[in-house]
Picture 1 (cartoon, one colour):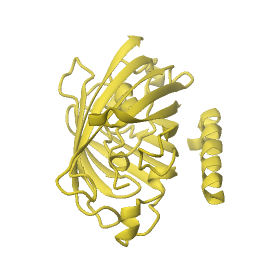
Picture 2 (cartoon, helix red, strand yellow):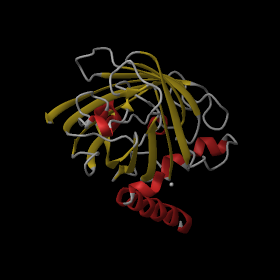
Picture 3 (cartoon, one colour):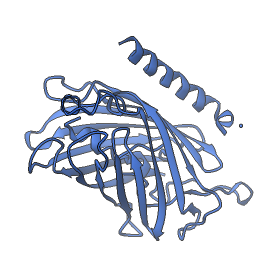
Picture 4 (cartoon, helix red, strand yellow):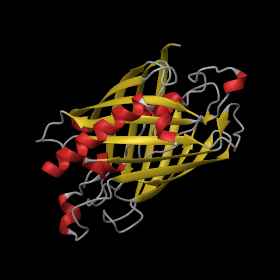
Length: 289
């Protein structure tokens, strides 16, 4: 317990320090663990959401397709949005021929380029029974030179009798859009990556994993790398803290911020019993730009 509290405290302190000092940063058997759709990343990639910068200070941003489906990124929004998503996985870990769904809805506001963007969302992870709610909270800041950082808390206030999550999860994630690889979308980069560290779902394996001999702990560290293979289509490789996965992020309509993510996870024997397919659909709606 003391180690867990120390890690959570360290993550929050590091996140606060990075948000306030951006220049210095440069010199379970459960569906929730496998599907970690980043809606704030989707909001940020809505195209017109990015701020217009003078030519002298122009930098490349991540392109407009999802950079990850199973792992967090450090990207945040720039503007005021309401957003919603629905995702599914099949088969569910350690269950035969069963799928699972998750829905999420929330709001974000603020400019991550000028100050910070704050996003709050609510999850419902038992969709067919309309129960098992939990809350997420994100604070994001652009650091310049195509970089961004997010400090977040996930699955807060979950009902312990319904949720199989290992308590609340805290994490910090850093993302960067490579400035030398131009996307076919103006002002964006072909290649971006994220790396982070967290507690909860990134650190503790499920009881089924422990019973199966996979050990008690994940890596705590997660990451992803995303490359534009076609305009508005990204190929992503992801390490969720528990397992390896590959995904595609697709923005099917140029004039719509609708985003689709599809992939396969649990490709190693580090956790889980078999590979699972994942599909997510999300949409942000701008309130004020």
